[in-house]
Length: 551
Image 1 (cartoon, rainbow, N blue to C red):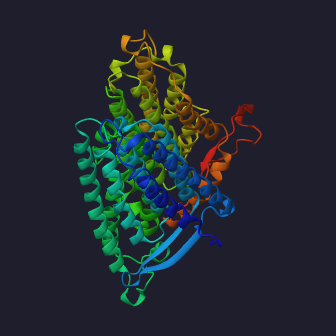
Image 2: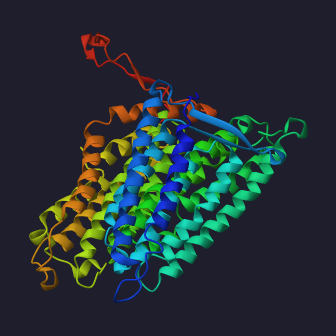
Image 3: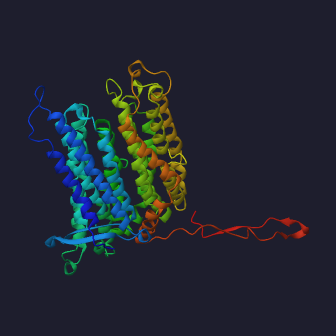
């Protein structure tokens, strides 16, 4: 469905304009009268304002895109645009979103102004660094929006690789600690390795198209869906795409870059990388692996589900043992991404819809954890990330403690908070096909409660440590950030219906594209039949038989 106004293109271009304006604000005003060359406070304040206003304009544009989107047809790609780009290669500038894609665009656009507000006084008071950091965040936003709306495989791949550039600089250039460059290089090497393998798959997919059928729009996702593929070639291409997405997701055993990144990047950077950028992995599995390689997806499903369950338990167990707060939050994401992948590869509309919803909910709850944890770290005289260096923080900063607890309980899927709904959908949808996998994964719910409550107890309860005696509670700016995120967790947990309208139809479409159907519900026959009298006048219980059960 196309509209007269190019909403998606504007959502891509505007952050680029805002990034350029932020980078140039205050340039050429000279140095301060005394002190180091830091760009001047005017430049810093103006750059922060320009970045924040630019990100809020993007939010307003997003509202327009939502207004133009028809939720009654959320399973199809709307707001579509297709323009010739590289005809010789069959590549087009083709964009469009279904319900899940639009929610992930909303997650990208909604988190950026909160990250900008959270980073208001970061970068050690160096105003030039802060200006460049904010400009890089806006540049990354443009790439994040593009990758979730790309409907051309070649365009998707180009953006998939290009967004590594701003991500690398956000980690290595603006991170924290002496190991930040090591973490940035590790992230880059893992991502480039996956991207290189994916490129082989992209080329192989192009060669599967008969020469007579190749044209200026060969790489359109719709044109590549339904191709008759050689079974062996299809499996190899699936593996190439899946490996790149598994690294990005991150999924066991190709996840090891993530804890290092979360430990050494700023909390705002980790929010964008883990809560948004890593969704490209699961989004790619859902929108590329399943429709392009349906037979191979069914072939690989048992193996993928085993790895997903391992990720669920492994991430939760390692989170319990962490002493670094940001590293702990990173491991929780390994566990949560396992749930998302489990729901996708069980091929049920309920499980797939739950995965789509969990991509959104995880982004909000984990983003809240990262940003609120960053507020706590900023209050420590040594900016320590070690959990053991805290204690009794709730006594001096009750709002900080309360918002951290709500965000943590949402990550643990407490009923009434956002993640609970999506996690239950994944469990129920997965149980109808893979009950053993669900039963093995269920203990992760208890483990999540352990790492959340144990961390809260160690950091926020008990006697306040001497270093934190003078710590202040959240100020107005920080309360705005935490309040928006906590409010979103409550709304999505208590009133999930409107958002479910965006994920239900895409879940059904994904199951249909992979050639599966939902298992029929159990039908109990004879349960309502009146008791009958058996031999000897005894009343026998009604017999029940279960038909159509997939269990």
